[in-house]
Length: 238
Picture (cartoon, rainbow, N blue to C red):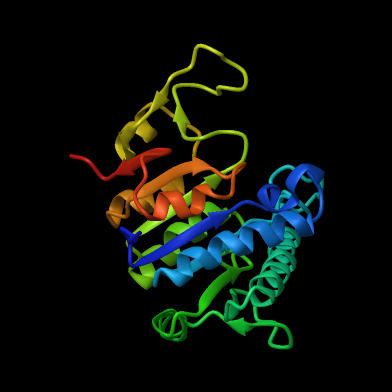
């Protein structure tokens, strides 16, 4: 099978890496993710990954007095996920680099756009950690930012507990309906909470396609890259 994208940004939440444990890292889940990512690397796809940190810390929900400090703690959680995912990928024979927006040279490279692109051209997986390095911005916004910076063809937004975008939360409203396609403006106008508004606007302004799909079955990573009709496609629109 042939991939339909050359260069992708895969957004993985911390919760997805926790598997059924919900908190921390489930190494079996991590290994399964790594095997599925290897499949698309073997197709020749240039893969970058933005990881969340919600399995360790959710900055906007945690009860620290200083929101900025809370967000920095969350960024460090993404670094733990990135290093663990790197280990799982390299254990499966995938050459991987971790780049962090907050410098910590003992464990990862600092984020340098040109170096990241060069790694991708050499078919190395690049994991972007520590968000954008700034508080008050989500890892969804980081995915949109990095996709624009490296000229990715698409953002693959892997979601746990849902297989696309719905009119309302399908876990709470059994009558909600799934969208096959949407525009970014429709997401903003309908206040659909699939990404924060900063990330949505950044994708719209830079005309970056987005595919939202379920990660409960990690095989969906491969399926979406080869063009199977799963999830919800979001484009700029009119």
